[in-house]
Amino acid sequence: MIKVNMENLKEYIDLCKEKRIKEFNNQIYYIKKGFYSVISNDILQVLNWTQLEELVCGKIIFDIDDFKDHTKYEGFDINDEIIKWFWEWFEQTDENNRFKYLKFVSGRSRLPKSGLGFKYRHIISKAFRENKNNYPTSTTCFFKLNLPIYDNKEMFIDKMQYAIIISKNYL
Image 1 (cartoon, rainbow, N blue to C red):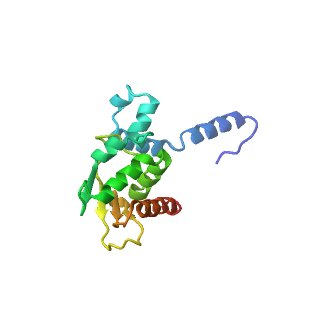
Image 2 (image 1 turned 90 degrees about the vertical axis):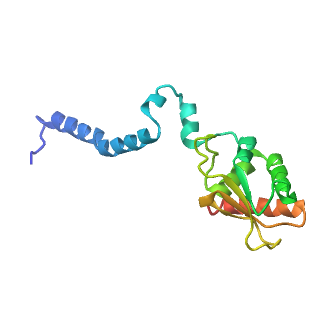
């Protein structure tokens, strides 16, 4: 142990600064290693920050057509009335509600970049316990909406709106 005095104070301060600056080098090394395992350094050389943000975080703007292209149906046909209600509601609702819905069914706040992040298709599935008084539920691990069949479009909209609004308090 060396005692600090006026003669070695500058050296002590320099050593402290160097220690603090290099304190997280190991952690930064592993973060960079993980990052470069997903996105190569070559790609980073040609991307600007907004392109990188979209690649890593997903799209800021909700592309409904792309979302439809990545949707499949279980227990429903694309021409079923409730599926038509769903897409009418989805297209007519505001962007904020679309992202709330996305959070409700996937836990994500943004859509992945098309082709890169859609490992799982968005699924609209007939609810197992079919009761028109139940609310839609989701299985976020599977990007899945479990949808009861409702008597009318207004009931569907009320139940869907409530489900996505109340769920944001729990996600």
